[in-house]
Each structure stands twice: as C-alpha cells, then as structure tokens.
Amino acid sequence: MSATINCDIAVVGGGLVGAAIAYGLAGRGLKPVVVDEGDVAYRASRGNFGLIWVQGKGLGFDAYARWTRLSSEIWGDFAQELQDVTGVDVAHRRPGGLEVCVDDAEYQERAEELHRLSEQTPGFEYELLDPAALRALVPGLSEALPGGAYCPHDGHANPLYLLRALHEGITRKGGRYLPEGPVSAITPDGAGFALTTRAGRLRAERVVVTAGLGSKALASEVGLDAPVYPNRGQILVTERVTPFLELPTAYLRQTAEGSLQLGDTHEDVGLDDGTTSAAMKAIAARAVKSFPFLESVRLVRAWGALRVMTPDGAPIYDASERHSGAFLATCHSGVTLAAVHAIPLAAWIAGADPPPEVRSFSAERFHVQTAA
Amino acid sequence: MFKPLPDSRSGCVTLTIDGQSLSVFEGQSVAAAVLAAGLASCRTTVVSGSPRLPYCMMGLCFDCLMEIDGVPNCQACLVEVREGMVVRRQQGRRGLQP
Image (cartoon, rainbow over all chains, first blue to last red; front, side):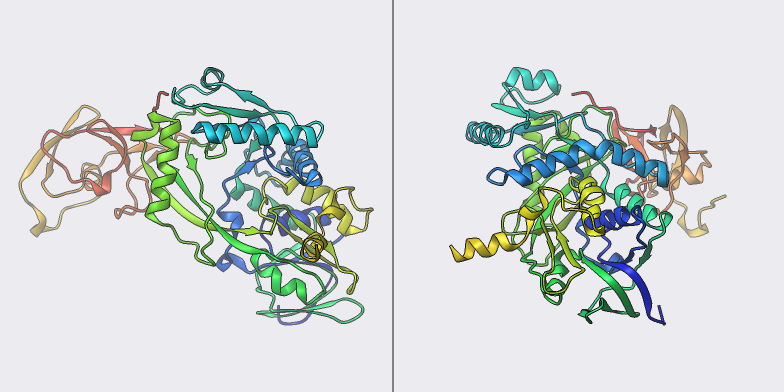
C-alpha cells in the first residue's frame, strides 16, 4: 500500500464484527476496504466459544433481547448464503441450547431470570427442566443436578470457519481485506476520512470503527464514544470423541468434528490473554460435575481470549453527529450477532433507515446513566 | 526408509501393534517404532478417515495418535516402548459412551 488508496467505505478492524459488516456492505453495492491489524491482533474472534446464544440475554434491555433473537432466527439462511458464496460450511446448528445448573441456588436464579425475560420480551421461549427431563434430553448428565433450562432459539457454529468465510465473502463480493493495520489515526477532513496505517494512507468517504478493544481510541477521533474494556475468558478443548451432545450448553459444546469445548471464565486481568491452572481446574471440575463420564477424557488445548466488554454487556452501535459518515460497532457477541451485523446493521450503515432496535444501542445510554 | 544410527542400538522389547508382534529397540518412542517398522499408518483422521503417520515427533502435531495399553488418543511420540505393550491404530474419534 505505497500510494494512497481511495474507497467509498473503510472498515477498521477485520474481526467477526468488522468482517460481518463489511460482508454486508459488499453485498449492497459498496466496495468496502477492511483495514485489519492481522494475526498479531488480540482477536477475540479466534478465542470465541462459538455459541449463538439467546437465553438470558437482554434482561432489562428489551431491544437487546429482540436483536439477539432476530439474529438467531436469520442465522440459518445467513450460513447457507455464506456457504453458497464461499464454499465454507461454518457448521451452523440450531437445535436449541441448554443451561445446566449445578446447584439449587443457580437453578432458582436461572428460573427467575428466564421468567422475567419472557414477561419483558414477548416471543422469548424457554422451558425449565427437572433432573429427569434434563437427563432424558442429554444422556450421561449427573443425577445430582438440580435442573436446567432449554431454549429453542439457541444454537452454535464454528467461529474460525465463520471468520474465514466472511473474509472470503468480502473479497468475492468486491471488497478488499488489507492486513496493513493497525490504523493509528482517523482524521476527518470534511469530505471524508484519512486513515493512517502501518503501510501508508487510505482515504474513505465513510468509515466504520470495528476495532474491538482498539475502538476506544479510534472512535474518539471521529466524535464517538466506545467505553469498552477487556474481560478474559479461558477455554479448554478435549480430544475428539464420539458425538453425544447435540445441544450446546453454556459451558460445554461438542464441535462438528467431535472435540469438546469447555468454558469459561470472566476475569478482569487487563490485556493478559494467557491461561492459569486454577481457572483450567475450575472449568474442568464444572464440566465433570455435570458430565461425570468425561473424567477420563483427555484435554489437548487451552487458551485465554479477551472479550470486548461494554458497561452493560450489550453492543454499541453509533453514527457520529459531529463527523457525518463515521460509524462505530462493537460487542462481545461476534458469533451470535453476525447475522444481524451482516444484514440489518450493514443495511443501515449503507444508507437504509435504521432497524427499530438500533437507536437503543447508542453509547448515549451510558451518559444518561452517569447524569442520573 | 528409516534406519537407526549405529551407536543408538540397544536391547530389544516386544510389543504388538493391532495384534502384529514387533521387536523394537529399547528407549524408542512408540512413534519411532512405527516408523522404523515401516507401517503404512498409525491412525485415521476423524473427518475424512485418511491414513496418517507420525510427523513432528515432538508432541505438537497430534498426527501420531494411537491407542496404547487401552488408552485411546495417546501421542505415540511421547510414550516409550515397553515389553508387552499393546498398541492399536487410532481409528477416527475416541469411542465414548455416556
């Protein structure tokens, strides 16, 4: 990238959020250029657990509950389209999902939470399961468990194949992927934006900041607020075993190839994306408490990754009032929300009327809370 | 294809691989014994069922997975041969009954 590149829209950050939006923009007549930091980025997208998870999300935030469910409802068609365009099967399944509770307090809390969510957001469906119903659904669960919750809206996919498919799809639909980041500055010049990258300059009529933890600094340059912070999750992966778990659970899912993924933790440790033996032990212990027959299964990998968290856990989508043409999108649910990012959110950024939920996700909501 | 270095020869132990008896050098890994014996494969892959032989020989690539003394998915390059060891090719996934 020696000479300045000109484009109609630049997407700053090629993780799952930026890639899904760029894929959607490329399907709407735009030629997005994704400027990505490349494989040295923190890349929450590569540490993701792979759930498309609806149950429990959006209590106290109806728009978030509806937005998440909408994504899960259109995910199947989205996955099919991705496969048609790119040939990549992202292993999307939507058999529903299971929250397995390991003690009575957790079960009671879950039951109350889901009841309130169903009253708040019509159309949210779930079913509480007593121990017998739980074991009928998933053979091999411990008899000592108090119960769980089934939600038909939940599913899962392979996050690595998803990122691969999106990058391939962007290129096939006329966009570009440039691993020339990080973008060190975004300078509004009245008619558009100049981006400074490691390899040179890029001029864009519009810009979308989707830089994960890097969004905080970049968004402020275009008059937007991205109060994001890192939250570490650790995940364990086992050897591949006979398929026995069709339903993803919040802490254990079996991939299409047979590996088991065990999660997770929520740790406030800054930018440390390492692993700890204490956390790995706790993760494994919880999985074995629910599924005792996993005791002999061999672990083969573990990793830590940094969630891109917002103060209320919901996404932030904003359009800059000060610098028209600048947008911000950030969240920690890059897999769950990939379908709404590629379809209604990208349509809005491309110029369509905003989807009804979108206004609720402005970072303005944090400022109101601060003032109150 | 593989020959032991002249000064690496030592005593021998006998093990079986899928029932076939093999005399191998003491101190070798199971993966080295598989290569020295010229076997066609040590496992088949999970997704496509294609045959594999040991590759990295240092515990990283997971291509040398075998069932050793009843334990499935062992990394054969990290296990030393022993007299009477019972080794089987790993056929795809590990079987697991809930």
